[in-house]
Every structure is written in C-alpha cells, then in structure tokens.
Amino acid sequence: MANNIDWFPGSRDGQLAMAKLWLLVLEACAVLWGIPAAVAQALAAAVDAADAALGVAKNETTRTPVATAQCKAEFEDLAAKMRDMKRRYFLTPPLTDADYVSLGLKPHDRASTPSGTPSAQVMVETYLVGRHELGVKVVYATGSPKDPANKGYRIWYSVVAPGEVPPTDPEELRASFFTRRKKDVVEFGYGDSGKTAYFAVQVENDGKKGNWGPLTSALIP
Image (cartoon, rainbow, N blue to C red; front, side):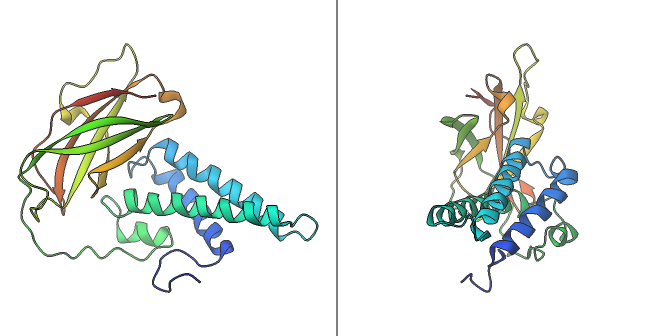
C-alpha cells in the first residue's frame, strides 16, 4: 500500500494515467523546463512498456506468473523514472504552481528559512556511466558544503558536434538542471554520441547563485 502522503498514485492504473498526463504536458514544456529529449523519450518508452505489460497481465488468457513478474518490473522502472524526473526537473524553477497542477501534483512549498547568498566556487569533474551518459561530480574550489548558503548546484551544459564552435565562457551554456547531490548523471540523446559536452556549475540557494566554476568538457560515449 502506498504511503498516503506520497504524491505517486497507489494503483497501476493511476500511475499509468499520471505518466501519460506527464507526456502530454512535456510535449509543450520539456524544452522550457530544461528536460533533455532523451529523458522524455525514456519516459515515453517506459509508459509504452508498462501499458503493454499491464494489458497482458490483466488478460485472463495471457496472464501467467512470468507476465505478472514482467508487469511488476515494468512499473517499477516507470516509477523510478518518474520519481527521478520529479526530483531533478520539477522541484526547481521555472515551474509555477499552475505547472505542478497540470502534472497532477500539489504545488511545491517553496517557503524556506533565509540562509544567505552562496559565496563558494565549485567545479565539475566528469566520469563515464554508460552509453550516452556522463556522471558529474561537484568539487569545491573555495568554501564548504557545510555552509547553509550552499544548498544545491545549478549544473549548466551544452553539446557541441565536431566542427562546431565550442563555448569559451560559462554564460554561453544553454541547458541546466538543479541538484542537491554532489554526484549526478546527465543523460544525452542517442545522436549525441561522439559529440563533446561542456559543463560549468554555480552554487545555488533559493534562486541566489554563487560564482561560476570553470568550463569542463568530456566526450559523450
């Protein structure tokens, strides 16, 4: 039984309905909200797989222990992707209360105790995770992660194909996401393999940003 205070529906039909609602909203808002195409595509694939598995598991002529186990696995994958998307993209600006309602979620409580403007400077180290994925690790150059002003990190990035002009300043980076973790993963599109990703990061606290860290680049596997 799902926790009553959890935002995620307790039934598989409810989970599937919410996931399909998200896909409709993301058709118009994914770019505005800084959600990579690969992330939205992965959610769409998970919805299709869960929908198909549920149909097989519900059908009296096709329902078997294997089909039931497969359905459970597909919905666990769908739930993981939705929770990760909410954590990484829906809990930060530019979403408004109306955006949350459109996704079937309760508006996020943005009230917080003032804790100052970030002054730390951090940089990004990258590492390989998997196909079309790069890990990013936040490393402090100045300041301390224990400082309450350093609540999280706005990681900016751009993808540059061979022959294109690379960015020379962090201000030229175009996509971003917010995370409170010092290690996270960036997923890229299938066609981005062999291109170069450029990164820079700012410490962020309730919309207040610290100094830019240096540009870092890595080849997308």
